[in-house]
Image 1: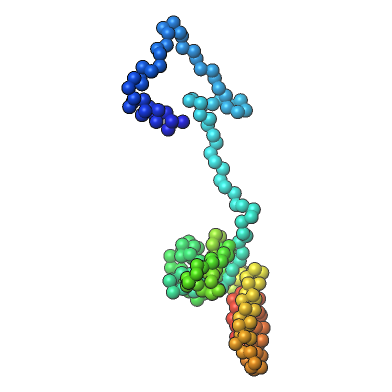
Image 2: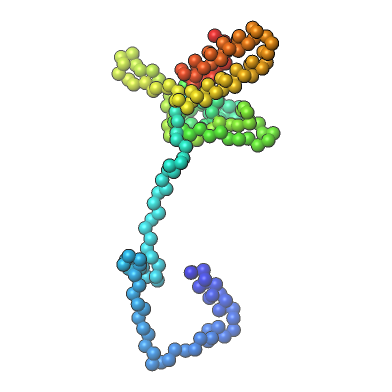
Length: 217
């Protein structure tokens, strides 16, 4: 409304006879008081007719938003100095927020992250970690160092058992590595036996660490 009035005033100032375009009000006409208006529900309106609206409510988390899962793994650094946990990249801001400004010194330690995992699909000819995608840890709610209980049993450690979602994803990666191994060792019985052994070891490791390690042990 204020923009329309401003534009009307600008047009009026630039037009001849604009100020006298309306006939003067009769001298005997007494100004009438404007009727009091009320807001919906009986609440009186503010001066000028504008309703006093309450402040907007804080948006709630959508029920369809992906849930946060527990992801554990060794804290590593990518070539670009990005924090990476079990092959999943986290932002530097989240690492500094939860682990402090010297978070890089914690490289090599196991951590537990509560976050949403999202696969970023890479554009054609872009450099990606694997399979044309980059797994990202977003909406991070916590990052903790994995610790064991103290010798007296009083100090509680940080449980770093992988979540069911991470175990399932780990086993899927083991299966993909096994298929690739079988393809490369086709026709070689010894190689195929080693591939089968590596798959079993890999899947067993998923239950403990959540990180796929495809090697026969």
